[in-house]
Length: 69
Image (cartoon, rainbow, N blue to C red; front, side, top):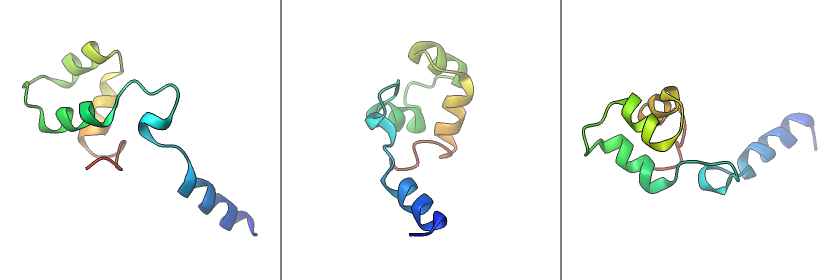
């Protein structure tokens, strides 16, 4: 197995989202952030959930938690 094959497989089987032990978000919260039913700003979401505002921005832009539809 070449290095590139190894890295490809490692990425494919890496834990994501809630599978990570330090995750502060879950799929349900991610969906709620994206639909923004509460009408909250990124800052308000971040304060409520104990994460950085950029984390909320990344969730909204599908740059993180992409595996959650």
